[in-house]
Structures are given as structure tokens and as C-alpha cells.
Length: 233
Figure 1: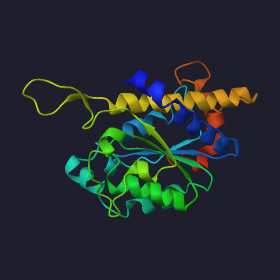
Figure 2: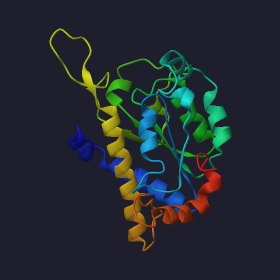
Figure 3: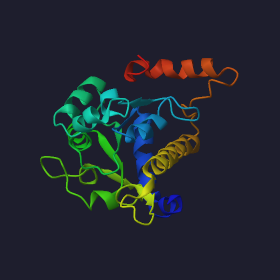
Figure 4: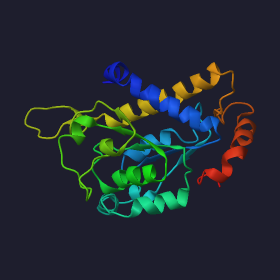
């Protein structure tokens, strides 16, 4: 699966890196969002050793596995939440928003993409095209995430997310979307850093807090973006 991503998604990843780099160069911040287990992919981009500092993760416990699925699963299907998230996080026109959703059919990620574009953000989707095209959207307008994004990166996962089939078992096991999502996210980050280096610029990258001077290095970089990153405020 990772080989397939490298072979088929390189252009989309490069396009995403170009857009993010241009935004960061203009003192922008990269915003990332995922609900359900996709939030783990969003967290991979945030406050991570070797990752970019100007990243605002739009993390909400009520949309994550930290909240019982009987609540969080229903909330992800509720219209109107996207506006609240964007109003709270205050992304600026010209910035990029990465939305991770394996199926890409629930109202929150779809509405987030549509509303973000209305606010002149660039939307980058990490999703499973196989799954999305095999099922109906739950969005009131019938849209799926890949139909609302500016850049689409396919995680190359199978419908249903599972990779392994067993005799007499209806469900496949071994979900791939987290591994694929983390691989894609880090591929984008590495590509953005390459662009900084190619321009002779020092990229704003976290040093591990478990290395000498790591804390001081990170605090110095965070100072520039603290007011824009809600989890650092």
C-alpha cells in the first residue's frame, strides 16, 4: 500500500507541499483536522519532533475516540459544527487546511471543506477514494470530501479500511488508514522542509524535547506562532 501511495500520489503530495510552503512563507499557519480515528493522523502533524512548528490541529475530544462512540459517532454526522470550528480556530484566507477522513462522507469533514473554501482557504483532503466512491454521502448536499477539496490525496486503502480477509469472516481486519495517513502526512512535511532548504531558508522544525537544548529551541520557534495555535495558547 505504501508503495502504491509513492507511485500514484506523488504529484498530489508535491502540490500540497507547494501550497503549504507558499502559505508558511507568507507567515501563515497550517491547519489540520480529523475526526474519529482520523484525528490520530491530524495529531501526527502537531507538536512532533521533526515536524513543523506552525501547525494548528483543530482537535476536539467530542469528535474523537476519547468520547464514547455513541456520542462522537453521531456528532460527526451533525450539520453546523464546521462553522463553529472555523470561527474558533480563526484560519486566515490563503492558509491551508488538511482534512483527514477515510470515507469522507460525514457532514463535519465535508462541511468543513466547503466552508473553508468559502473563507478562501486551500483544502487538502487525505481520504480513501475506493471507500468514498463505494458508499453514499451523509451530507445534505450529497457531497463527499474528495468532491469538496482543492487537492485530493488517496490513502489507497480498501473499502471498509481492513486489509486482511479471513474465511467465514465478513469484516476484513488490519485497518490501514492510520498507517497510510501518517505516511502521507510526514511525506508532505518532509516535502515542505525540502522547499525551505531549496530556497536557502531555515525551516521551523521541532527538535525533540528529549535532546539537549530541545525545549529552548522549541520555545523560541513557538513564540512566533503561539497566538495562532490554540493548543499552545
